[in-house]
Length: 140
Image 1 (cartoon, rainbow, N blue to C red):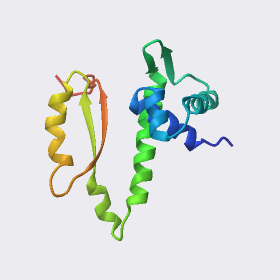
Image 2: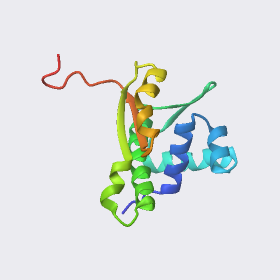
Image 3: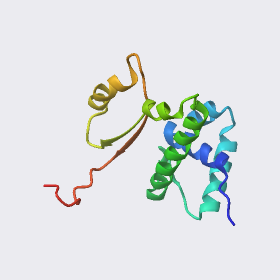
Image 4: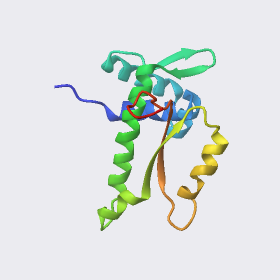
């Protein structure tokens, strides 16, 4: 039976979120070479590359983007588990999952979502950026 090393997945996730090894290493308080080596181990375990390494930095591959979506869900659930209080029924109300069309300007998306994280009951968010699937039956 295979087991996923969640520490390796976390290093990948932080690197993908921050956009580069240097920023991820600072956040994780590890050397860039350590983070890179752990990501390579995850890639070896999965059997495919998660990042395309370019002179401009590390870009997620298609499979890397798919793994990122899983990692978002896994780590949000982990945070919810740690945040669970006396009444777990109310915990889910503090989280919002939002999909943003990739062509929507970031400033517009930020302004639209601002009420969710500001105010008297701020929410934590998982934001997924991508293309809207127009092939769904019933869409024009």
